[in-house]
Length: 264
Length: 371
Image (cartoon, rainbow over all chains, first blue to last red; front, side, top):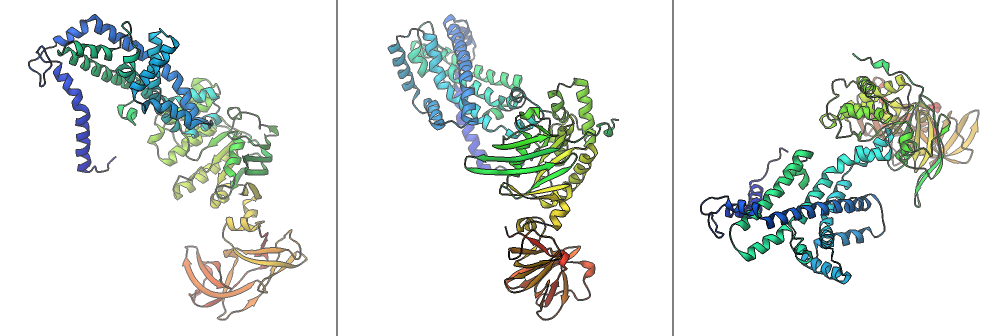
């Protein structure tokens, strides 16, 4: 850790960080502007846009629905993704690469195409179950994140530890809970968080599959932008950023897993 | 203070392997191994990498299922017993300490798996740590320990529940030479004190000689020779064993005659050898004469001579090694190495370019199989 970092690397890293963080700061600043329309840099200071958004029943409903949807999708993705990741990393199955390719394909195909395809499929089936459709759609695009992250953590597990535990008298289920789980927990949590955030932020899939009663927050944000152009849009965007940040911080506090480890 | 001696001596179990084989597809890794580790004995499986020694150890542990054959401890077959019910102790190559548990939790793991009550578990784990000189390290994490300390934790963890058999997989490979030697002696003492039957896998012949009562030299999945350390060294049965354990000079020869325990051999160049070492090879068979460097005496002849059990050659180089002086002679295009005790060197030691004659006694002339 005492390696000297070249100044050039420091500059490049600083530039990258600015590029990543700057767009997040812009809506934060715009959201406190005491004007009837969005301006940058902000003029004056007010929190009224936040108050407007937080007391708006439509915004509340969309926010709660997105929470519900993201929670169901995360649980579904973990239930499907963990066994799949175990199968892909611990066993030799014919056609393994093909399976992995199909699962990861939503990362390659434009989301909007996946959304249209799902819409066509559901309409052929005559489906009216909007929540289920959204759950399926989001799970399809979230699963790659879970599987990548979970299989990564399984690849990194030290098989020697499992052998050692068995020799010491641990039955297979004890090895799973006491030896494997502590090693893969960070990867599973990271996968779950990614999954939650991807679902929570999704627009292109929801756009095709949602209806008036199932209206996720990114869709609501878009309709607000179409209707008006006041700083409440920036306030919603800021709240979404705060929410994602809060989520990561809570996980870090509760599970003691650092952001750095999640990223690796 | 806890009393280290309070981990009482248990009767080590005898381990018997009968016709053990293991193959992966067409690849036969271990073929028909028959071996017995007697109660309380330290047995070393010694061989180059890929000889099947680790697979054999893992089959005893139950981590690999044999494709044929039986394993028994104290005569009771364990081949079908799952790993976690075999009640063995095992030390892994890189210690395999659980990184998310403290030292004490690591050591206590085996006891809690056996349903030992909490207070007793802690008590016994502490005693095992005392036995491996780690009192005071209970609450450290394994990553905060040095290699030698991690090794001791692994050892305490393996013996705390008093297994009858201890398995060691290249246990000292990661330690530096000094520490390795200290740990070897400590381990040997501990195993003897506890009466543990110990099976050790190593590629280091010196380690096998230091630790083991019995050495099984393996090659290509088979046992080349299994005997006491001394017998392996002094009576190697094959060219491979004589080459793998210690250093030897080899000369191909044919057996001319056997008479009164004395075997006469002749090399391709016509040189005669006499040996008092018993061999199962018969007259007319091809053999290899092996001479240990330390069995050789040197005399300055000044000119080339050739007699029974004596050969002369030009000194290529000499290397001072502390207790011995190694001298390389050139003989018929190949090198012949001699190790002279320092006190046996007179006022004029061998110098490169001189002609010296090596000779050795018939008791020290080993006859080994060609293959």
